[in-house]
Length: 506
Image 1 (tube, rainbow, N blue to C red):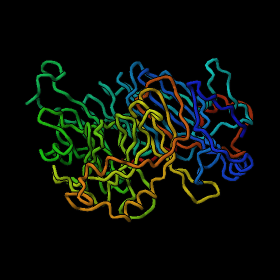
Image 2 (cartoon, rainbow, N blue to C red):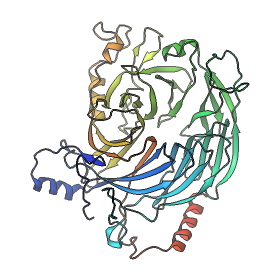
Image 3 (cartoon, helix red, strand yellow):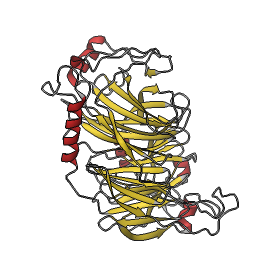
Image 4 (tube, rainbow, N blue to C red):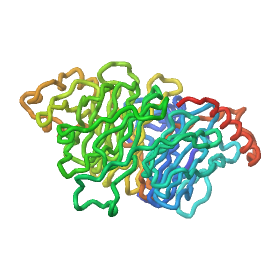
């Protein structure tokens, strides 16, 4: 693949980490042995724009000094998607084709659907060359990225989108409904109605209209078995369980006073959950509040509380699947905060008891970001990626972050070694006084840095949500010479959707 000209440092568009003094021959050998890593990053913004960026890491970064060549960023698409701010994004699982389905939800009550190519454009057919730009940006357009249509089955702002499989799209909105759409023909199969909470005990400063109550689904999470779903809503100090086989309510779990005190929700606090997610094994799930999160087991009992030090607002939560198969630290929990950090917690290991609430406290493993040298603004969303090398069994762990000031960062992680050190040093104990008489809060004040910034890129718009996935190389027999006609794309798209939508699970 031909080299692309990198953006100059200090131009406000793209920048890379300063490299060490390594001979050029060594860098060239590494690049030839391991090959480049390509990422497709998609950012939703307040300015109603969907921004697509490709990030090319010149070689597979699986060595000790693997952050020396920087990252080459280029704009791949720019969709004027909605009439209002974009609130959420969702990517479908990869199918047999080289395309993924992208769905975007907005406060304009609509869901837009796109086809995004999962392969890198080849320069041999003229579709991988950089286009001229007056702004000084690298632009590599892919004609396979196109809009499919718009869904309008919600009557309020869309807050969450999920693809449990490639054949189904679930969406939640402020109209207190969770819709299920089929991707084969984009028919809305069913709509799960969430009860609207009653207005009682509301503070005088509530912003709800006269006679109205805060209503709407904030988020939902689907169990890996595709049979159970958990949702959290506005104005409710509880979470709801749903049976996806019947589409009916399976139970309501209230947040008791002890749990709300542990997460810092007082008498006049809202006490509602904002985000919810299952881990990859389906053995536990986490519910995030404004400044803390609680980990629940399959018995729906609290297993641990997650609090940042110093306290900061939580914007996004994700379980990190290390795939190491070692019980005790296979699924750390990552959260992004208001002060520009992504903090990792040992959510499924032994925990220190919290004296205030007697709920075990999850210890912090490490963090990335923080400080003015990285990001000076809150991280609204992030994505965890695991990339396998071509000739090396070592897997690279990357984090893609998006902050509200329009900066996208690509990081590498050394998370596994920190977990093993923490697990072997007996720093996690079941004692109210912590280790060596120190309080648990003081133990988490100094969180080690476990990542290194590869590069960052400014898109010029305020980011609200972000998704990313790794691109694959096209084979020579798949790379057609000359431009692809629109009729061929439409016939191929229809065939792919029919094949992917044949399953009726979920």
